[in-house]
Amino acid sequence: MKLPIYMDYHATTPVDPRVLEAMLPYFTEKFGNAASRNHHFGWVAEEAVENARKQVADLVGANAKEIIFTSGATESNNLAIKGVAEMYREKGNHVITCVIEHKAVIDTCKKLEKQGARVTYLPVQKDGRISLDDLRAAITDKTILITIMTANNEIGVLQPVAEIGAIAKEKGILFHTDAVQAAGKVPFDVNQSKADLVSMSAHKMYGPKGVGALYVRRRNPRVLLSEQISGGGHERGMRSGTLNVTGIVGMGKAAAIAKAEMAAEGERLRRLRDRLNEKFHQNLDEIYVNGSMEHRLPHSLNISFAYVEGESLLMGISDVAVSSGSACTSASLEPSYVLKALGAGDDLAHSSIRFGLGRWTTEAEVDYVVEKLTSVVRRLREMSPLYEMVKEGVDLSKMQWVTH
Amino acid sequence: MAYSDKVVDHYENPRNVGSLAKDDANVGTGLVGAPECGDVMKLQVKINPDTGVIDDAKFKTFGCGSAIASSSLATEWLKGKTVDQALAIKNTDIVAELALPPVKIHCSVLAEDAIKAAIADYRKKQGLDKDTRPADMHAQPSA
Image (cartoon, rainbow over all chains, first blue to last red; front, top):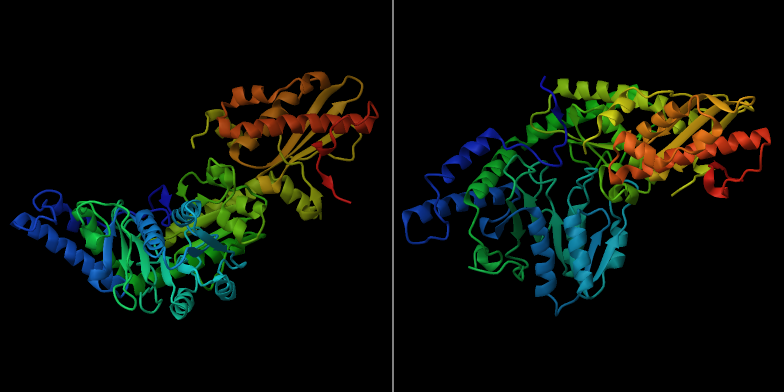
Protein backbone atom coordinates (compact mmCIF):
# COMPACT_ATOMS: atom_id res chain seq x y z
CA MET A 1 0.00 0.00 0.00
CA LYS A 2 1.29 3.40 -1.03
CA LEU A 3 1.17 6.43 1.26
CA PRO A 4 -0.27 9.02 1.37
CA ILE A 5 -3.74 7.62 0.70
CA TYR A 6 -6.07 9.73 -1.41
CA MET A 7 -9.65 9.56 -0.11
CA ASP A 8 -10.93 12.93 -1.32
CA TYR A 9 -12.42 11.91 -4.67
CA HIS A 10 -15.21 14.52 -4.32
CA ALA A 11 -12.61 17.25 -4.67
CA THR A 12 -11.03 15.86 -7.80
CA THR A 13 -9.97 12.58 -9.37
CA PRO A 14 -6.79 11.57 -11.14
CA VAL A 15 -6.97 11.24 -14.91
CA ASP A 16 -7.50 7.60 -15.83
CA PRO A 17 -4.50 6.39 -17.88
CA ARG A 18 -6.93 5.28 -20.62
CA VAL A 19 -8.23 8.84 -20.76
CA LEU A 20 -4.75 10.30 -20.94
CA GLU A 21 -3.87 7.91 -23.75
CA ALA A 22 -6.90 9.04 -25.74
CA MET A 23 -5.97 12.69 -25.21
CA LEU A 24 -2.28 12.63 -26.05
CA PRO A 25 -2.43 12.67 -29.89
CA TYR A 26 -4.56 15.80 -29.76
CA PHE A 27 -1.79 17.83 -28.16
CA THR A 28 0.68 17.22 -30.95
CA GLU A 29 -0.05 15.64 -34.33
CA LYS A 30 -3.86 16.14 -34.17
CA PHE A 31 -3.70 19.71 -32.98
CA GLY A 32 -6.26 21.26 -35.32
CA ASN A 33 -8.88 23.82 -34.44
CA ALA A 34 -12.27 22.11 -34.47
CA ALA A 35 -13.71 25.23 -36.08
CA SER A 36 -11.37 25.03 -39.10
CA ARG A 37 -13.92 23.73 -41.57
CA ASN A 38 -11.77 23.78 -44.67
CA HIS A 39 -8.85 21.44 -44.06
CA HIS A 40 -7.88 18.06 -42.76
CA PHE A 41 -6.50 19.25 -39.42
CA GLY A 42 -9.78 20.92 -38.53
CA TRP A 43 -11.84 17.92 -39.66
CA VAL A 44 -9.84 15.55 -37.47
CA ALA A 45 -10.32 17.78 -34.44
CA GLU A 46 -14.01 18.27 -35.18
CA GLU A 47 -14.56 14.55 -35.55
CA ALA A 48 -12.89 13.96 -32.18
CA VAL A 49 -15.06 16.61 -30.54
CA GLU A 50 -18.24 15.18 -32.03
CA ASN A 51 -17.27 11.70 -30.90
CA ALA A 52 -16.73 13.02 -27.38
CA ARG A 53 -20.03 14.90 -27.51
CA LYS A 54 -21.75 11.60 -28.29
CA GLN A 55 -19.93 9.85 -25.43
CA VAL A 56 -20.96 12.52 -22.92
CA ALA A 57 -24.54 12.51 -24.24
CA ASP A 58 -24.71 8.71 -23.93
CA LEU A 59 -23.71 8.90 -20.29
CA VAL A 60 -26.86 10.87 -19.44
CA GLY A 61 -29.29 9.60 -22.09
CA ALA A 62 -29.14 12.79 -24.15
CA ASN A 63 -28.77 13.58 -27.83
CA ALA A 64 -25.25 14.68 -28.80
CA LYS A 65 -26.61 17.97 -30.12
CA GLU A 66 -27.76 18.84 -26.60
CA ILE A 67 -24.24 18.88 -25.13
CA ILE A 68 -22.38 22.19 -24.85
CA PHE A 69 -18.74 22.02 -23.80
CA THR A 70 -17.48 24.53 -21.25
CA SER A 71 -14.42 25.16 -19.12
CA GLY A 72 -15.90 23.26 -16.20
CA ALA A 73 -19.00 22.93 -14.09
CA THR A 74 -18.69 26.37 -12.51
CA GLU A 75 -19.05 27.83 -15.98
CA SER A 76 -21.85 25.38 -16.81
CA ASN A 77 -23.77 26.47 -13.70
CA ASN A 78 -23.21 30.14 -14.50
CA LEU A 79 -24.29 29.68 -18.11
CA ALA A 80 -27.41 27.71 -17.18
CA ILE A 81 -28.64 30.06 -14.46
CA LYS A 82 -27.64 33.44 -15.87
CA GLY A 83 -28.46 32.29 -19.38
CA VAL A 84 -32.02 31.34 -18.41
CA ALA A 85 -32.54 34.42 -16.24
CA GLU A 86 -31.58 36.70 -19.12
CA MET A 87 -33.37 34.80 -21.86
CA TYR A 88 -36.65 34.37 -19.98
CA ARG A 89 -36.66 37.78 -18.29
CA GLU A 90 -40.00 38.63 -19.89
CA LYS A 91 -41.60 35.50 -18.49
CA GLY A 92 -40.54 36.00 -14.89
CA ASN A 93 -37.74 36.81 -12.49
CA HIS A 94 -38.00 34.17 -9.79
CA VAL A 95 -35.50 31.33 -9.28
CA ILE A 96 -35.74 28.50 -6.75
CA THR A 97 -32.63 26.81 -5.42
CA CYS A 98 -31.57 25.35 -2.09
CA VAL A 99 -29.22 26.27 0.74
CA ILE A 100 -26.76 23.41 0.26
CA GLU A 101 -26.00 24.01 -3.40
CA HIS A 102 -22.40 24.44 -4.48
CA LYS A 103 -21.09 28.01 -4.32
CA ALA A 104 -21.08 28.10 -8.13
CA VAL A 105 -24.88 27.99 -7.95
CA ILE A 106 -25.45 29.98 -4.74
CA ASP A 107 -23.19 32.86 -5.70
CA THR A 108 -24.60 32.95 -9.22
CA CYS A 109 -28.07 33.25 -7.71
CA LYS A 110 -26.86 36.00 -5.38
CA LYS A 111 -25.54 37.87 -8.39
CA LEU A 112 -28.97 37.60 -10.02
CA GLU A 113 -30.55 38.98 -6.86
CA LYS A 114 -28.30 42.02 -7.08
CA GLN A 115 -29.59 42.50 -10.60
CA GLY A 116 -33.18 42.46 -9.40
CA ALA A 117 -34.21 38.80 -9.58
CA ARG A 118 -35.93 37.11 -6.68
CA VAL A 119 -34.39 33.86 -5.39
CA THR A 120 -35.85 31.36 -2.95
CA TYR A 121 -33.30 29.24 -1.09
CA LEU A 122 -35.14 26.13 0.06
CA PRO A 123 -34.02 24.65 3.39
CA VAL A 124 -33.08 20.99 3.66
CA GLN A 125 -34.41 18.44 6.08
CA LYS A 126 -32.23 16.65 8.60
CA ASP A 127 -31.35 14.03 5.99
CA GLY A 128 -30.06 16.71 3.62
CA ARG A 129 -32.92 16.49 1.13
CA ILE A 130 -35.32 19.24 0.21
CA SER A 131 -39.01 18.86 0.92
CA LEU A 132 -41.14 18.63 -2.22
CA ASP A 133 -43.93 20.42 -0.36
CA ASP A 134 -41.56 23.33 0.29
CA LEU A 135 -40.72 23.34 -3.40
CA ARG A 136 -44.36 23.39 -4.48
CA ALA A 137 -45.11 26.16 -1.99
CA ALA A 138 -42.23 28.29 -3.29
CA ILE A 139 -43.41 28.26 -6.90
CA THR A 140 -45.08 31.44 -8.16
CA ASP A 141 -46.29 32.50 -11.59
CA LYS A 142 -43.00 34.38 -11.92
CA THR A 143 -40.83 31.29 -11.37
CA ILE A 144 -38.70 30.59 -14.43
CA LEU A 145 -36.08 28.20 -13.07
CA ILE A 146 -35.61 25.56 -10.41
CA THR A 147 -31.95 24.68 -9.82
CA ILE A 148 -31.33 21.83 -7.41
CA MET A 149 -28.21 19.68 -7.39
CA THR A 150 -28.37 15.94 -8.08
CA ALA A 151 -25.84 15.02 -5.38
CA ASN A 152 -24.19 17.19 -2.76
CA ASN A 153 -20.42 17.57 -2.80
CA GLU A 154 -19.97 17.56 0.97
CA ILE A 155 -22.42 14.97 2.23
CA GLY A 156 -23.07 12.97 -0.94
CA VAL A 157 -26.83 13.11 -0.46
CA LEU A 158 -28.96 12.61 -3.56
CA GLN A 159 -31.90 14.96 -4.09
CA PRO A 160 -35.19 13.62 -5.45
CA VAL A 161 -34.44 14.97 -8.93
CA ALA A 162 -37.06 12.90 -10.77
CA GLU A 163 -39.79 14.28 -8.49
CA ILE A 164 -38.42 17.80 -8.76
CA GLY A 165 -38.28 17.47 -12.55
CA ALA A 166 -41.88 16.25 -12.64
CA ILE A 167 -43.07 19.23 -10.59
CA ALA A 168 -41.13 21.64 -12.80
CA LYS A 169 -42.58 20.08 -15.94
CA GLU A 170 -46.11 20.19 -14.56
CA LYS A 171 -45.72 23.91 -13.82
CA GLY A 172 -43.91 24.74 -17.05
CA ILE A 173 -40.74 25.81 -15.24
CA LEU A 174 -37.22 24.97 -16.43
CA PHE A 175 -35.22 22.57 -14.25
CA HIS A 176 -31.44 22.79 -13.98
CA THR A 177 -29.43 20.33 -11.93
CA ASP A 178 -25.76 20.46 -10.99
CA ALA A 179 -24.89 16.79 -11.52
CA VAL A 180 -21.16 17.17 -11.06
CA GLN A 181 -20.88 14.66 -8.22
CA ALA A 182 -23.44 12.22 -9.63
CA ALA A 183 -22.64 12.03 -13.35
CA GLY A 184 -20.61 8.94 -14.09
CA LYS A 185 -21.08 7.62 -10.55
CA VAL A 186 -24.76 6.73 -10.37
CA PRO A 187 -27.29 6.22 -13.16
CA PHE A 188 -28.58 9.58 -14.30
CA ASP A 189 -30.86 10.12 -17.27
CA VAL A 190 -31.98 13.53 -18.50
CA ASN A 191 -35.39 12.16 -19.49
CA GLN A 192 -36.06 10.20 -16.31
CA SER A 193 -35.13 13.26 -14.26
CA LYS A 194 -36.97 15.56 -16.70
CA ALA A 195 -34.03 17.92 -16.43
CA ASP A 196 -33.74 20.72 -18.96
CA LEU A 197 -30.19 21.74 -18.07
CA VAL A 198 -27.50 19.56 -16.49
CA SER A 199 -23.99 20.59 -15.41
CA MET A 200 -21.13 18.12 -15.55
CA SER A 201 -17.40 18.21 -14.94
CA ALA A 202 -14.66 16.04 -16.43
CA HIS A 203 -12.25 16.07 -13.51
CA LYS A 204 -14.78 14.54 -11.12
CA MET A 205 -15.01 11.47 -13.37
CA TYR A 206 -11.35 10.69 -14.04
CA GLY A 207 -11.05 13.19 -16.87
CA PRO A 208 -8.88 16.31 -17.01
CA LYS A 209 -9.45 19.59 -15.18
CA GLY A 210 -10.60 22.63 -17.13
CA VAL A 211 -13.38 21.01 -19.13
CA GLY A 212 -17.05 20.52 -18.40
CA ALA A 213 -20.34 20.25 -20.16
CA LEU A 214 -23.85 21.59 -20.00
CA TYR A 215 -26.76 19.56 -21.28
CA VAL A 216 -29.32 21.90 -22.86
CA ARG A 217 -32.64 20.29 -23.81
CA ARG A 218 -33.62 20.76 -27.46
CA ARG A 219 -37.15 19.32 -27.46
CA ASN A 220 -40.08 19.52 -25.04
CA PRO A 221 -39.18 22.23 -24.41
CA ARG A 222 -36.46 23.72 -26.58
CA VAL A 223 -34.37 25.59 -24.03
CA LEU A 224 -32.80 28.85 -25.08
CA LEU A 225 -29.90 30.46 -23.28
CA SER A 226 -28.45 33.90 -23.44
CA GLU A 227 -24.73 33.34 -24.04
CA GLN A 228 -22.34 34.48 -21.31
CA ILE A 229 -19.16 34.35 -23.39
CA SER A 230 -19.56 36.08 -26.72
CA GLY A 231 -17.40 35.57 -29.77
CA GLY A 232 -17.18 33.23 -32.72
CA GLY A 233 -20.51 31.53 -32.10
CA HIS A 234 -19.17 28.11 -31.13
CA GLU A 235 -21.38 25.54 -29.42
CA ARG A 236 -24.63 26.60 -31.09
CA GLY A 237 -23.86 30.16 -30.14
CA MET A 238 -24.21 29.43 -26.46
CA ARG A 239 -20.53 29.35 -25.63
CA SER A 240 -17.95 30.96 -27.85
CA GLY A 241 -14.27 30.20 -27.65
CA THR A 242 -11.97 27.78 -29.46
CA LEU A 243 -12.81 24.31 -28.25
CA ASN A 244 -10.45 22.64 -25.80
CA VAL A 245 -10.13 19.61 -28.05
CA THR A 246 -7.76 17.58 -25.85
CA GLY A 247 -9.86 18.24 -22.78
CA ILE A 248 -13.08 17.42 -24.61
CA VAL A 249 -11.61 14.16 -25.93
CA GLY A 250 -10.62 13.34 -22.36
CA MET A 251 -14.07 14.11 -21.02
CA GLY A 252 -15.65 11.93 -23.70
CA LYS A 253 -13.39 8.99 -22.94
CA ALA A 254 -13.94 9.46 -19.20
CA ALA A 255 -17.70 9.44 -19.73
CA ALA A 256 -17.53 6.29 -21.85
CA ILE A 257 -15.46 4.46 -19.24
CA ALA A 258 -17.73 5.66 -16.41
CA LYS A 259 -20.81 4.41 -18.27
CA ALA A 260 -19.28 1.02 -19.05
CA GLU A 261 -18.00 0.42 -15.52
CA MET A 262 -20.62 2.21 -13.43
CA ALA A 263 -22.63 -0.77 -12.25
CA ALA A 264 -19.69 -2.88 -11.09
CA GLU A 265 -17.66 0.03 -9.76
CA GLY A 266 -20.62 1.52 -7.90
CA GLU A 267 -21.21 -1.80 -6.17
CA ARG A 268 -17.52 -2.20 -5.29
CA LEU A 269 -17.36 1.29 -3.83
CA ARG A 270 -20.59 0.85 -1.90
CA ARG A 271 -19.15 -2.24 -0.23
CA LEU A 272 -15.93 -0.41 0.66
CA ARG A 273 -17.82 2.66 1.90
CA ASP A 274 -20.09 0.52 4.07
CA ARG A 275 -17.04 -1.29 5.42
CA LEU A 276 -15.51 2.07 6.35
CA ASN A 277 -18.70 3.18 8.07
CA GLU A 278 -19.28 -0.09 9.94
CA LYS A 279 -15.73 -0.28 11.21
CA PHE A 280 -15.86 3.27 12.52
CA HIS A 281 -19.08 2.45 14.36
CA GLN A 282 -17.52 -0.70 15.82
CA ASN A 283 -14.51 1.23 17.08
CA LEU A 284 -15.95 4.50 18.34
CA ASP A 285 -18.95 5.85 20.22
CA GLU A 286 -20.65 9.18 19.53
CA ILE A 287 -20.06 9.36 15.80
CA TYR A 288 -22.75 10.57 13.45
CA VAL A 289 -23.24 10.17 9.72
CA ASN A 290 -24.22 13.49 8.18
CA GLY A 291 -27.10 13.17 5.74
CA SER A 292 -29.23 10.33 4.49
CA MET A 293 -27.53 6.95 4.28
CA GLU A 294 -30.27 5.68 1.95
CA HIS A 295 -30.16 8.49 -0.62
CA ARG A 296 -26.43 8.80 -1.02
CA LEU A 297 -23.67 8.40 -3.56
CA PRO A 298 -22.12 4.94 -3.17
CA HIS A 299 -18.59 6.25 -2.70
CA SER A 300 -19.42 8.97 -0.21
CA LEU A 301 -19.40 9.22 3.58
CA ASN A 302 -19.43 12.22 5.89
CA ILE A 303 -19.03 11.56 9.60
CA SER A 304 -18.89 13.83 12.62
CA PHE A 305 -16.58 12.52 15.33
CA ALA A 306 -18.16 14.31 18.28
CA TYR A 307 -15.97 16.20 20.77
CA VAL A 308 -13.00 16.23 18.38
CA GLU A 309 -12.28 19.20 16.14
CA GLY A 310 -11.89 18.41 12.46
CA GLU A 311 -8.66 20.20 11.69
CA SER A 312 -6.87 18.63 14.64
CA LEU A 313 -8.10 15.29 13.33
CA LEU A 314 -6.68 15.98 9.87
CA MET A 315 -3.39 16.98 11.47
CA GLY A 316 -3.14 13.56 13.07
CA ILE A 317 -3.67 11.72 9.80
CA SER A 318 -1.22 13.51 7.57
CA ASP A 319 -0.79 10.44 5.36
CA VAL A 320 -4.51 10.32 4.55
CA ALA A 321 -6.07 12.96 2.28
CA VAL A 322 -9.65 13.73 3.34
CA SER A 323 -11.58 16.95 3.93
CA SER A 324 -13.19 18.53 6.96
CA GLY A 325 -16.19 20.82 7.33
CA SER A 326 -14.41 22.49 10.20
CA ALA A 327 -14.00 26.24 10.11
CA CYS A 328 -10.32 26.10 10.77
CA THR A 329 -9.64 24.54 7.40
CA SER A 330 -11.09 27.55 5.64
CA ALA A 331 -10.10 31.18 5.79
CA SER A 332 -13.60 32.24 6.80
CA LEU A 333 -13.54 30.59 10.24
CA GLU A 334 -17.14 29.56 9.53
CA PRO A 335 -17.94 25.87 9.61
CA SER A 336 -19.49 24.25 6.57
CA TYR A 337 -22.77 25.91 5.56
CA VAL A 338 -23.93 22.55 4.25
CA LEU A 339 -23.58 20.82 7.62
CA LYS A 340 -25.07 23.81 9.43
CA ALA A 341 -28.08 23.57 7.11
CA LEU A 342 -28.72 20.01 8.33
CA GLY A 343 -29.40 21.49 11.75
CA ALA A 344 -27.05 19.16 13.60
CA GLY A 345 -25.33 22.04 15.37
CA ASP A 346 -22.13 23.89 14.61
CA ASP A 347 -20.17 21.73 17.02
CA LEU A 348 -20.81 18.66 14.89
CA ALA A 349 -19.97 20.61 11.76
CA HIS A 350 -16.58 21.38 13.30
CA SER A 351 -16.10 17.67 13.96
CA SER A 352 -16.88 16.42 10.47
CA ILE A 353 -14.74 14.53 8.01
CA ARG A 354 -15.68 13.83 4.39
CA PHE A 355 -14.49 10.56 2.88
CA GLY A 356 -14.62 10.19 -0.89
CA LEU A 357 -13.71 6.77 -2.25
CA GLY A 358 -12.79 6.22 -5.87
CA ARG A 359 -11.53 4.08 -8.68
CA TRP A 360 -8.23 3.26 -7.00
CA THR A 361 -9.43 2.87 -3.42
CA THR A 362 -8.62 -0.57 -2.00
CA GLU A 363 -9.88 -2.52 0.97
CA ALA A 364 -6.42 -2.26 2.55
CA GLU A 365 -6.62 1.52 2.30
CA VAL A 366 -10.05 1.56 3.91
CA ASP A 367 -8.77 -0.55 6.79
CA TYR A 368 -5.70 1.65 7.21
CA VAL A 369 -7.82 4.81 7.31
CA VAL A 370 -10.13 3.30 9.92
CA GLU A 371 -7.25 2.24 12.18
CA LYS A 372 -5.40 5.49 11.81
CA LEU A 373 -8.42 7.71 12.38
CA THR A 374 -9.67 5.63 15.28
CA SER A 375 -6.42 6.02 17.15
CA VAL A 376 -6.28 9.77 16.51
CA VAL A 377 -9.90 10.25 17.60
CA ARG A 378 -9.20 8.32 20.81
CA ARG A 379 -6.09 10.36 21.50
CA LEU A 380 -7.83 13.68 20.87
CA ARG A 381 -10.82 12.69 22.96
CA GLU A 382 -8.42 12.00 25.83
CA MET A 383 -7.50 15.66 25.64
CA SER A 384 -10.99 16.96 24.86
CA PRO A 385 -12.67 18.86 27.71
CA LEU A 386 -16.01 18.24 26.01
CA TYR A 387 -15.60 14.47 26.00
CA GLU A 388 -14.59 14.60 29.67
CA MET A 389 -17.62 16.71 30.58
CA VAL A 390 -20.00 14.41 28.73
CA LYS A 391 -18.52 11.39 30.48
CA GLU A 392 -19.07 13.23 33.80
CA GLY A 393 -22.72 13.66 32.88
CA VAL A 394 -22.66 17.34 31.92
CA ASP A 395 -25.23 18.33 29.32
CA LEU A 396 -23.20 20.46 26.92
CA SER A 397 -26.30 22.01 25.40
CA LYS A 398 -27.18 23.51 28.81
CA MET A 399 -23.82 25.22 29.22
CA GLN A 400 -23.42 28.94 28.77
CA TRP A 401 -20.29 29.19 26.71
CA VAL A 402 -17.94 32.10 26.51
CA THR A 403 -17.94 33.07 22.88
CA HIS A 404 -15.83 35.59 21.11
CA MET B 1 -1.96 25.04 5.76
CA ALA B 2 1.56 24.42 6.94
CA TYR B 3 2.15 24.31 10.68
CA SER B 4 5.28 25.49 12.40
CA ASP B 5 7.52 22.80 13.87
CA LYS B 6 6.65 23.98 17.38
CA VAL B 7 2.91 23.64 16.76
CA VAL B 8 3.45 20.15 15.38
CA ASP B 9 5.62 19.24 18.37
CA HIS B 10 3.00 20.41 20.89
CA TYR B 11 0.27 18.65 18.91
CA GLU B 12 2.16 15.38 18.78
CA ASN B 13 3.59 15.59 22.29
CA PRO B 14 1.21 17.79 24.23
CA ARG B 15 2.58 18.79 27.67
CA ASN B 16 0.47 18.48 30.77
CA VAL B 17 -2.71 16.99 29.34
CA GLY B 18 -5.15 16.07 32.07
CA SER B 19 -7.26 17.33 34.90
CA LEU B 20 -6.67 18.50 38.47
CA ALA B 21 -9.28 18.08 41.21
CA LYS B 22 -11.52 21.02 40.48
CA ASP B 23 -12.97 21.07 44.00
CA ASP B 24 -9.51 21.48 45.57
CA ALA B 25 -9.31 24.99 47.10
CA ASN B 26 -5.81 25.39 45.67
CA VAL B 27 -6.91 24.59 42.12
CA GLY B 28 -8.23 27.21 39.75
CA THR B 29 -10.12 26.16 36.63
CA GLY B 30 -10.68 28.20 33.51
CA LEU B 31 -13.05 26.99 30.81
CA VAL B 32 -13.24 29.24 27.79
CA GLY B 33 -14.45 29.06 24.21
CA ALA B 34 -17.51 27.35 22.79
CA PRO B 35 -18.12 24.12 20.89
CA GLU B 36 -19.97 25.89 18.09
CA CYS B 37 -16.94 28.08 17.54
CA GLY B 38 -14.71 25.04 17.25
CA ASP B 39 -12.53 25.85 20.30
CA VAL B 40 -12.95 24.98 23.97
CA MET B 41 -10.04 25.16 26.41
CA LYS B 42 -9.99 23.95 29.97
CA LEU B 43 -6.90 25.12 31.81
CA GLN B 44 -6.20 24.38 35.46
CA VAL B 45 -3.54 25.64 37.83
CA LYS B 46 -2.60 24.33 41.25
CA ILE B 47 -1.18 27.14 43.36
CA ASN B 48 0.77 26.94 46.60
CA PRO B 49 -1.20 29.36 48.82
CA ASP B 50 1.89 30.10 50.95
CA THR B 51 4.21 31.09 48.11
CA GLY B 52 1.72 32.08 45.41
CA VAL B 53 3.68 29.90 42.99
CA ILE B 54 1.98 27.68 40.40
CA ASP B 55 3.04 24.13 41.26
CA ASP B 56 1.13 22.37 38.53
CA ALA B 57 -0.86 23.15 35.40
CA LYS B 58 -3.02 20.91 33.22
CA PHE B 59 -5.13 21.42 30.14
CA LYS B 60 -7.65 19.79 27.90
CA THR B 61 -8.52 21.39 24.58
CA PHE B 62 -11.10 20.81 21.88
CA GLY B 63 -9.80 22.72 18.90
CA CYS B 64 -7.42 22.83 16.00
CA GLY B 65 -3.72 22.03 16.26
CA SER B 66 -2.87 25.65 17.01
CA ALA B 67 -5.39 25.76 19.86
CA ILE B 68 -3.94 22.57 21.32
CA ALA B 69 -0.40 23.94 20.97
CA SER B 70 -1.35 27.31 22.53
CA SER B 71 -2.82 25.70 25.62
CA SER B 72 -0.03 23.14 25.89
CA LEU B 73 2.55 25.91 25.74
CA ALA B 74 0.61 27.94 28.31
CA THR B 75 0.74 25.11 30.85
CA GLU B 76 4.44 24.72 30.24
CA TRP B 77 5.03 28.40 30.88
CA LEU B 78 2.76 28.56 33.93
CA LYS B 79 4.58 26.00 36.03
CA GLY B 80 6.89 27.67 38.51
CA LYS B 81 5.53 31.13 37.85
CA THR B 82 3.90 33.33 40.48
CA VAL B 83 0.33 34.39 39.92
CA ASP B 84 1.44 37.87 38.91
CA GLN B 85 3.97 36.51 36.44
CA ALA B 86 1.30 34.25 35.02
CA LEU B 87 -1.09 37.13 34.54
CA ALA B 88 1.61 38.95 32.61
CA ILE B 89 1.62 36.30 29.85
CA LYS B 90 0.22 37.88 26.71
CA ASN B 91 -1.33 36.19 23.74
CA THR B 92 1.28 37.87 21.55
CA ASP B 93 3.99 35.94 23.43
CA ILE B 94 2.25 32.72 22.40
CA VAL B 95 1.85 33.90 18.80
CA ALA B 96 5.56 34.67 18.63
CA GLU B 97 6.71 31.43 20.25
CA LEU B 98 4.52 29.20 18.05
CA ALA B 99 4.80 31.36 14.90
CA LEU B 100 1.01 31.35 14.53
CA PRO B 101 -0.39 32.76 11.29
CA PRO B 102 -2.99 35.57 11.47
CA VAL B 103 -5.98 33.22 11.14
CA LYS B 104 -4.81 31.38 14.27
CA ILE B 105 -4.32 34.37 16.55
CA HIS B 106 -7.69 33.70 18.17
CA CYS B 107 -6.19 30.45 19.54
CA SER B 108 -3.60 32.43 21.48
CA VAL B 109 -6.26 34.87 22.72
CA LEU B 110 -8.23 31.94 24.03
CA ALA B 111 -5.17 30.59 25.85
CA GLU B 112 -4.58 33.96 27.54
CA ASP B 113 -8.26 34.07 28.52
CA ALA B 114 -7.96 30.56 29.94
CA ILE B 115 -4.99 31.54 32.11
CA LYS B 116 -6.83 34.58 33.46
CA ALA B 117 -10.01 32.61 34.06
CA ALA B 118 -8.13 29.86 35.93
CA ILE B 119 -6.35 32.31 38.21
CA ALA B 120 -9.53 34.29 38.84
CA ASP B 121 -11.25 31.06 39.83
CA TYR B 122 -8.42 30.27 42.27
CA ARG B 123 -8.58 33.74 43.81
CA LYS B 124 -12.30 33.53 44.21
CA LYS B 125 -12.01 30.17 45.96
CA GLN B 126 -9.35 31.54 48.28
CA GLY B 127 -11.41 34.63 49.03
CA LEU B 128 -8.38 36.67 48.00
CA ASP B 129 -10.47 39.16 46.17
CA LYS B 130 -13.83 39.44 44.56
CA ASP B 131 -14.31 37.72 41.28
CA THR B 132 -13.27 40.59 39.10
CA ARG B 133 -13.74 38.72 35.90
CA PRO B 134 -16.34 40.07 33.55
CA ALA B 135 -19.43 37.91 33.89
CA ASP B 136 -18.81 36.37 30.50
CA MET B 137 -15.27 35.19 31.16
CA HIS B 138 -16.17 31.77 32.42
CA ALA B 139 -18.40 29.07 31.05
CA GLN B 140 -20.96 27.76 33.47
CA PRO B 141 -24.08 25.64 33.52
CA SER B 142 -27.06 27.87 32.92
CA ALA B 143 -29.77 28.08 35.55
